[in-house]
Every structure is written in structure tokens, then in C-alpha cells.
Amino acid sequence: MMKSIKEWPKMERPRERLLSQGAGALSDAELLAVILRNGVQGKDVTALARELLAQFGGMRGLLSADQGELQKVKGLAGE
Image (cartoon, rainbow, N blue to C red; front, side, top):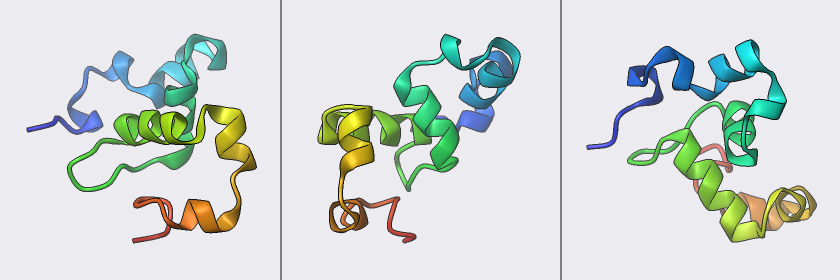
């Protein structure tokens, strides 16, 4: 079973790393995870972030996706 981010060592968690080391120390997936805040059942927020970046071809593709595309993604549509 996948560990919740709350169970990770504190200095491995994206939000804590952002606060202690700055945004430059984080990957795009980790930065996106901080913004998303929560994953979905069976998938922690960093896994969701990596999946989104892969699906949309990176941060630029995700940021330029239209509302309809984003609403189809489990975890973004407020489910």
C-alpha cells in the first residue's frame, strides 16, 4: 500500500522542501504537488502531479489545457 505524504520523512515532503530550500530545489512535479495539495484515492499527490505532467506534455501543456480537458481529470474536477 502506498504511503501517505504525511508518513514521509518531513524533509522529503514537497511543501517542507519548498519552505526550507526554495522552489529551485523542487521538480515540476513537486511544485505542482504543492499547488494541488491532495491526491486521489490510491494515488498520492506527487504521483498525480507526475501523471498530469506526462498526460499534458509538461507544465506548459498543463497550463495551456482548456477547462474541458482539465475537468475530465480525476482529482481536478472536485470529485
